[in-house]
Image (cartoon, rainbow, N blue to C red; front, side, top):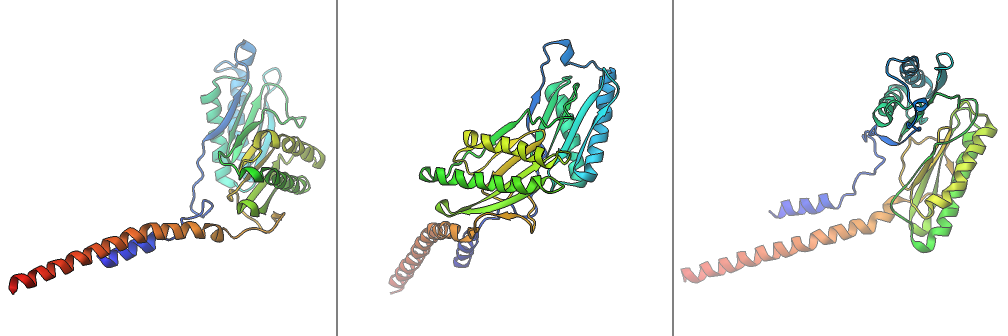
Length: 307
């Protein structure tokens, strides 16, 4: 019994696996979606129509092409039934995984928006947009999706944290807009709250350097309004996106931007491990002492009976 209790104490004191550990399987669910107006006939396509056939062709071609390069866009069919579409995967989500994510997004488009001619679906690792009007020629980022982590940094540290996040976002935006893949990641330590911050910026690869940087600048400008003090958040757009979290959420590479020295996570969690050990060891010790006391009392009682 004593050995079993000691094993329980040892096992409980071990740190839990980090959220970014290998083996985690991404869940392919629609993160957010936007459906165009469906109140009039012009906003809807009919089953078995020419537009429906063009859209079906798009939903087969774009995921297949993007699985090889991470991005695909094009116009399908002739006017007035042309379907314009765009598909993008996060740079570290490639191959069959990318294709599967995009195929799922096209299915979600039908399930969530019916027969709308204007649909955008965002997943964590990919997104699609299709429309009956040509949106591919420009760099318009709408519709955009905003979400934040429910946790905040300490109230007194909000201004400093917001400044660090903005600096990190600008640093990865500079890098992303100047590489051919239009994607970059970065990291920074935030000692006041004993956390690290990891950031990502991405544009569709068909944007020029200037277009990409301008698109990202538009997102970064909105971040203080929607994400102030939050330990994680994202603003996703059709053409570009920025996201940051206190935990690693992307595949790390050797060329990540490092803005400030990182903190050692194990040091920040050592106090928690100590509390767990104390919380378990104290009642276990009481149980052991109680067991020994009962054993000694029974032994003395037996001696009295024999005497």
